[in-house]
Amino acid sequence: MLPADWASSVERPRRFDMTSELDELKARYQMFGASQQLRNLLDDLGALEPTHALVEAPYVDWDYRAEFSQLYSRAFNPPSDKAERLLFFADDKFLGFAVMRPTPKPVGRTAVAPPPLIANAAICLAKHHVRPAGDRHCVEAYPFLSQDGQYGRCAHAAIWSIARYHHLRHGTARRSIAAVVEAAGTRETIDRTFASGGLHLHEVASAFRKLGLPALMYDPKKLPKVDSKRETLEGVACRYLDSGFPVALNTAAHLTVLIGYGYNCDELVFVRSDDNERPYELVHQWRDGSDRLGEWEMLLVPLPGRIHVPSEHAELAARRELDRVSGATKNTLWLRQKLHDGELRLRTYAIDSPEYKCALPQRAPELPDEVVDHHQSVPLASWIWVTEFQDKAVAPGAAGRVLAEVAIDATSHRLNPRPLLANVPGGCYGWLPEERKARFKRVPAQDSYGSALPPRPVPPLKVQATG
Image 1 (cartoon, rainbow, N blue to C red):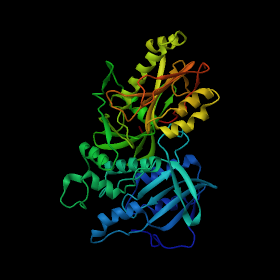
Image 2: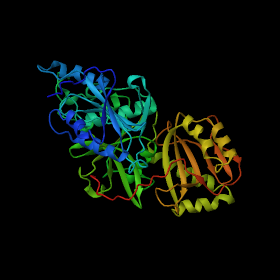
Image 3: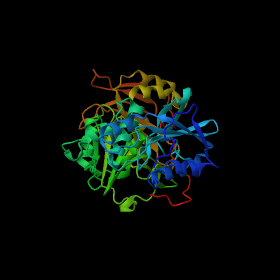
Image 4: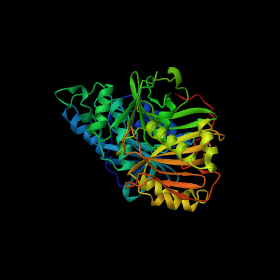
């Protein structure tokens, strides 16, 4: 049963001390039994050292109201149409929020900061703004929503979280969980308000397309060959994650979302959001079916913009272009040799071109002003793929040292990606739309400069993660 004062109007949000009143707070939302998501959420918040939580009630949540309208309102004995919102603080620092629904799985729309252990590796974070009682707060977090087990299932929750992230991060349309269920066309039932039985993979891909986020699909057993070399799962996933694009992960009976990665010494670990468990989970045993969810069967990458060139095609085009321009002068033949000998680490990411140009001055003074001025003046497509050619002597996960850089038009033909700009020690290249040959500009030679991608170290894993 619901608490007697569920969603009752109060003058100011009720306050719970997160030390002395935590058990009382947990008990308030265990309405129909234990909630694994709520327990994990509150446990993970402990790493952020919260001091108190505020309960905003009643709270009208757009997503829960959409669920209520489409399904619960038609029941003989419907739950309350009102929700509550928990706001978490560490003294004056805002840690995030969680909407609590009057359903068996109460954790609704949630955004909490990642725990310190995961902070460096959690890449796909967006800003969430809240204004309770006239106060303004903001938190950077990945959107989380637990399935309710009836209207929305795990696939719907994963699709919703990706769609909401792209809305907040890239300005795509805001979609409710009801819109996700409708887009998925669950089992093509006559009455779309019927309780969901889950989704097949083709329904997931169709839902992303209908929501304006067409998804690229990668089968780990059949990854594409690029220039006679088979792609690797980690290579594919990390390129999209470095771009800030969440990757939907399909396993035998579950759909979750990869939202980041990092390195624990030389070990590659992923950060996953699992609606059945928690917003952030370190997955460090994922090869050869060692993941607790089983073998990784498919990766789906929903794209937020006009990105027609897959990451692997863009990286190959950048490699070929560097091979060509570094062989054009004697001063850069050493760079070409390093490329041929496999002594360069390639880091590729997609970015919208205004953001790329705005970030260039921040890489000075290591990146010469002449390079910054040149790259800012070259006309670019709305989205570009950037490949950094880094010194492989620097350990993975550390701050990369860049020797050269090539940008590819992400809106060009996937089989013939078009270069836009490049820089090598001592020179810059720019490909203008109306000109067939690249323009060259001589610039001061630099040994190396800092990567645009931040280092991604993960603290040593003291306890076995749930992955």
